[in-house]
Image (cartoon, rainbow, N blue to C red; front, side, top):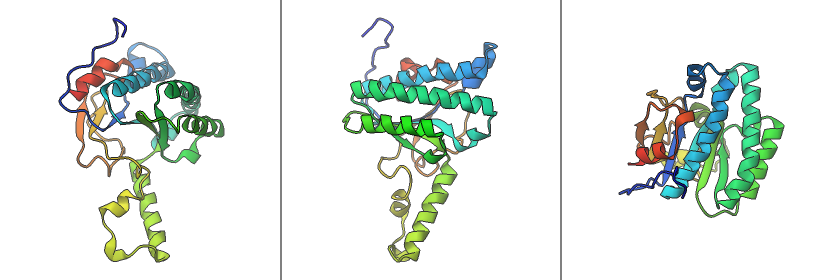
Length: 231
C-alpha cells in the first residue's frame, strides 16, 4: 500500500451492494474554466478509485450510474466524446478487472450504444465472466422508468401466453423481470455533488436503501470518500 493510499477503516458492516450516482463532472470543469469533457475525463479516474475502494472494503456488487437515457439529449459533440471515453475505459477494464478478479456486467438499453462501444462492452464482459471477486455493474443508457415499463410489458406478454397466473403476481414477479434480476438490491446509495434526488436511477430497487449524499464533486471523489460513506 503506497503512502497516498487511504487506510481501510474498521467497519461494523459492509454493504453487499453499493450503488453510486456519479454527479458533478460538468460543475468541476466549470469551476476550473475547463471544457466539460475534461470533467468527464477526470471522472473516469474516480471510477477506478471507487472500484478499488469497494473491492478493498469487501463490497460484492458495485453499480455505477454511468450514462442515462436522458443523457442522449446532451449536445452531440459531448455525447460523442463521452462514448469515446466509455470505449477507452471498457478496453482498460477488459484487462485490469481480469487481473483483479473483478467481473464486469451492464444494465440498460445497451443496444442504444454505438456499435464499437457495444463490441468493447461485450468483450470486457466476456473476458471477466469467470472472475469470482466483486461484480461491477455499469448502468448505460439506463432509465428507471423505462426499466419498469419494459418489465411490465414482459409480464403482460407472459400473461397473454398463459405462462403467468394473474392471481400469483407479486413483488417478486416484478423483481424477476428487471434488468437487475440477477443481483441483490443495493444496501447503500452514494450520490456526489450534493444533489438530493434519485435522477431516475433504480427506482424500484432503492425502496429500502440507505442514502449517503456528499457535496464532493465526482472528479474529486476518491477512496477516502468512499470509506467515509461506508462509515
